[in-house]
Length: 380
Image: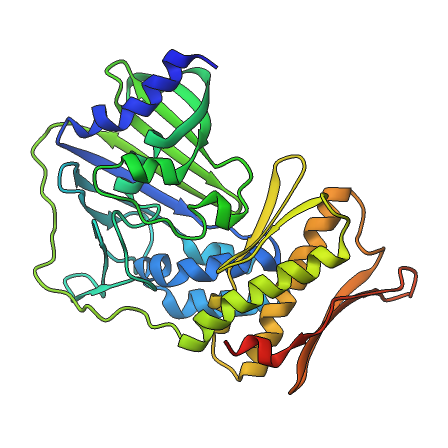
């Protein structure tokens, strides 16, 4: 790795922001693979799906995916937009491109707004209070290279008619946030220690001869975000909403508390089943699982706990997502079905406890049981 190249990428954010303004193209694709990734997608539905005018459809697809264990939700959180940005204030406004019923977006430090309809009212779209630039938004992506840890040159390419060096590397979002101008929201996907990302966040950056970012692509397990910048320094208009509804998406207090208890208890119990050192498990608000070879998975339970239903139903779907996620991860890591061929996961929720086990339909692999979880443990 060239130290000069690493320094160039780390400085690209500052050189880009010195231009004051730019026009942009912003795209996202939160594609999910399997049930465990659907859980993560839920955390983004309230943020990204409204921009498509498809909140009900998005939740319907997520719910269907949760029930069926497929990846139907991936189509619900994909979008394209174009807009303008002011680097010094961190303000950005985007208009939808290429799909019917989409909605305008406005981002600023501490704020993420969605317009209800064309010419309609604006509302805040966030499940939690935001500190700094909202996760995965244009300003957030521009500041991200400040935390680059490793980088390599891919090739020389052209972006919008401008010759650029295409580089690829890994970024520590926490380091980027510490060095950022506007601050950066660090949610479960942004923080490697919480998300299960094994080597930081993977980025591709296209840097022009003046050291400015022309294109940025962020890679995550099951998601990607693309930003292109052009017309630096030109006069641009930011469609800043005069007023907006400040009511945030509310999360059940029980769901927030139970989420941490579930993840901590799940990590401890899975560690009892698997050989020491084979996997790195983490709890907290997110259950993370990493294994050798750079692969990882993460599950964020509070999204499932916040879906409609009784507490028993919420716990059943949450533990089923965790059980299937672990089964898929161990099978992928070992290159063979775990705990055996034709094995499926099972969850039983009673008034006293939650039981989870895996067994083969033909009995060839026997039964693997998790230590039962007392319901009292989930009522912190």
